[in-house]
Image (cartoon, rainbow over all chains, first blue to last red; front, side, top):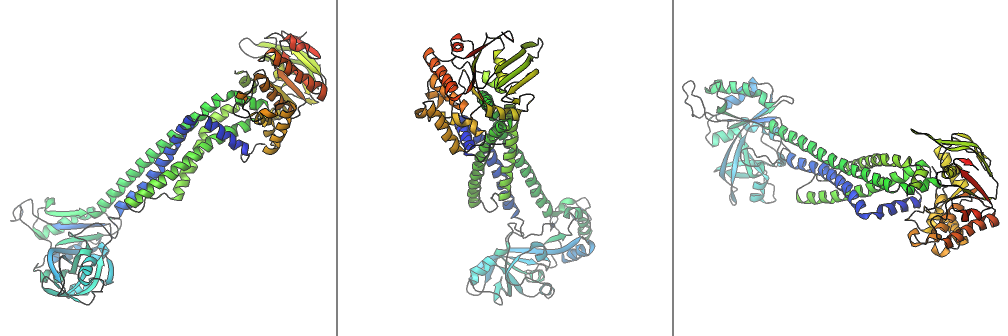
Length: 411
Length: 219
């Protein structure tokens, strides 16, 4: 081929033909622009939304469930319908020993509105008793010192871990570790400062706002007897927490005279299931985004093909003249194709730029994750250019077949 | 320059049309000839074959020592570009290019650089007295000026022959004369070989030889 795409003349011609019918060119370009912008915004925004929702689960072992006690709904073995029962420390041990799929089990019991003071500054806070397995399930962030451990639990040490907000309220910026804190009138030594990254609250408050003490100290100092409150279990990877529910019900039911069919006597919340639901939701959203994006892409591409077809029809005479004075068929194909590609590239790039601006605005207003990866942007561009070329190919092949005599006589 | 030997051409179809029947003719270097005939006589088909715009079924066509037969589209395009200058009745200029760009277009397909193309085009327009119209679009030119631009375009590649298809058909009598004068001058001063297809006897008279074609045969 003698003509080169680097020849200025080619670009002047492309500019000239595309600007001859400005409205039509603009509308076609807008189709492509909108197609790329839609696709880019959907792909970029979908990641941002996912990031936003997934942050609820961050810092949280997801394969876990929460078990709580409640009221019997079927009268059984002398216990009336409506009578209360509660999970005990013995139950916790029975579950730990009876179900080997449970990797970690933690009892937790919260009491709200407890007065907390170092002697000079006081605040009301939620107090939560937790067993040593708690950090395996809840993955707290330790800002200072350490978390409650097994020896604290076994010896019912009067130690506590305070939430970051509680620490800031009472001690300001100073490290509270080693200080003594009155919690409901009993002094506890502070061993650590903790918080959480997840948005999920267990026991009614975030760790940041709580005072955490060993479960054994909680039972003793708050007169709970052998009650264990609610129980969190972490289940071995690959096993669904819900699949353990019947065995858990059997163990607890035997110990507490609950009718085997009384499934409502116990509260069982499978966090893994919730997590999965969000994942499925996002798979769906992604699919929808792809569908909408690809539909607009196809619409844009058909627009280009259509317009190239019209251009070829309109210029039959001109193409004939060019062929008569020495244009090779390949010169004509190149000319028509490069017009389609130029239109696609310019409109596509504008679409990408536009969606980048929109996503940047969304990132500022909603949160991180609303950004278009360079690879995604390039992928969209390349797809568009390839499809734009293919769409222009049929009209340009038609143009190539134009015989000079027919075209010249076509007056 | 041009030698045709027993050229036959039939348009296939339900009723095949035998348009050229054993055409043999010679056009020497530096000749100014006209090909005349009524419409339907086959003169346009003959011009298409001479211009390598169309093929033929049997016979031989020699142009400037080359046998023109069964050429690929690319080869045909190259030969048209280098050896033949076309002038059409309806000018066939590209409407969105100025006169100089129109004249330069054949050089574009030879891969000549833009600067050089423009310079050669300007030179050619100057020779035809159109230097001041170089930057005008075809729509801003009169019929006679358009045809002179078309002639400049046909000359720019220094072709072996100029083929003109009813070059005065769309012009009034005064500009027709001007255009014919240009052809005569090109022929007498530069020795250009020119074949003009026409049905206008006035045009035929101004050429050195008239080839008459009737019903697909030379008479």
